[in-house]
Image 1 (spheres, rainbow, N blue to C red):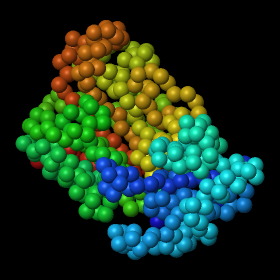
Image 2: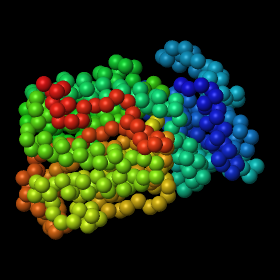
Image 3: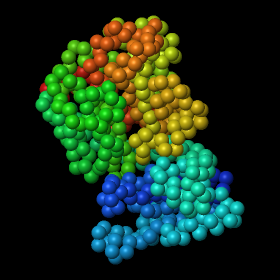
Image 4: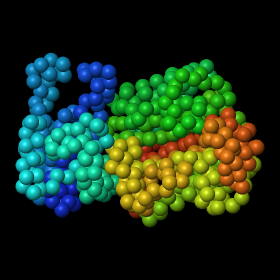
Length: 460
């Protein structure tokens, strides 16, 4: 938790960014897995947490954009609840820690909001990503739940994005801590994994590092010998010498800030010759993208540079041909790189993605609909204070290869006879986290080994 002054200033800035009215920021509720009292791990809504700093369920914050006053709505624990949870701080004491001086019960919220609406005041809220919050908002505001999305406030959405996307020094310090811990998770896996283990054993070692440091997982661990599957959460395979192992994992600290790193390493002590060559091309692509990070650069151009680097590099293997600019414009690179080069990061591992990629990543400009390019989450001009990932990769996806080959898709740029030989290769990715600075960019947290020699040194 930051100081009460931090949260007070954040709310004040948000209030002055709007034309008036009330700002409604619901916190998250507990969510049952299979019955009421067996809940998923609780994670607070990031926008509520950013402005009110409280990681507790069933709270709602209201900011008066006209007066600047903030109110916390919630309920004190009953004795029956304390039997199960233990004694927790009172809402008044929690509110005081974040500079809020007015506390009301949850039952007062509906009448409070209806009174404001009756007085002709606008109630601003963000489009909810959880159905339970959508239902609560519809009840509080007396509308059908189907109407909630259309009535959510674009003015508030833009104001929150403009504030949260620029990270303060104290936020960057927390993200550095999260990335340090994330790096320790990857280093543990790179030292631990051995032929004959299951993927689940490596994933468990990774999770152990985060939990032992009083952190948590920022997202479900990707720990797989099938790196061509971009979000592969299956951990049942036995890893063998000759396999490549792709790990994508991140830690979340007590302050809910996160790290997000990817590493690829051989299960054997050394890469095979082919693995070395593909890995080096992926690394060259990564470094080419990193070199472009600076204020004023378009991240879409960073991504297209990565695409061209991959396409041009695969010519050496006989997989691609023709002009790289033309091929990338047509989308031929997406056979090997069907995703984006990076995304914003902060309190959310894909920061503020619930507010809409078009606004978070593109400032309202419509995204491309082309396969591959449509998966680029960030495409706008970079500014100092942005925190983002850089994670280009090379993937050989058998099902995608089969489909494109059957359609003879973009065959002027792709040699399917040679590509067929790579269908069992898997995938390669390195990922690092950066903050844009006035001079360029700074890598966040401790560095993972990226070079072939550095990776193999950890595997020996």
